[in-house]
Picture 1 (tube, rainbow, N blue to C red):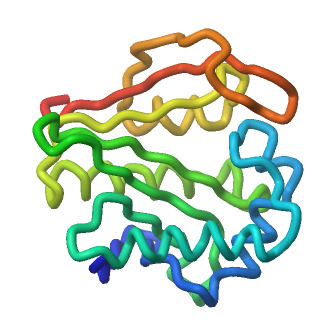
Picture 2: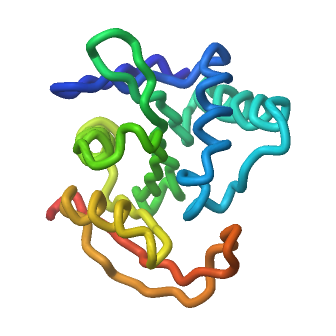
Length: 179
């Protein structure tokens, strides 16, 4: 069961809960945050609730392999985004990270700060060897975040991501425990 709370200088990362539904629905419904996301804009709040319930279920497994965190400012419980780390095969000691932040909180260093903490958590507490991430080639904001956290671009995969604008190429990033 995921009861892990991670803290940084400005942020608190805590497991997602059902009370986060309205915020998550708003976040997923924003045109700006949907541009490079493969989920698409939900048709209604019930669709978002199903996704949230899945994340909560995964967080609460006895052996959690998919951690989904709400990202809050540490100055008053204001949620500003989501971040997750999904473990791969045990033998490979790897995981994939993802994040989505409200447009009102872009370009303030919050995503970089949260991702650095998730990477630290992955290497120091989950004992991972490799952490990966992917993003659309046009997603300049995410590319910047991934590179600021020390991740290295390793791949360019053609027409991988089904975005609302059509198929997009994907950049693959990774960081090793030894980096």
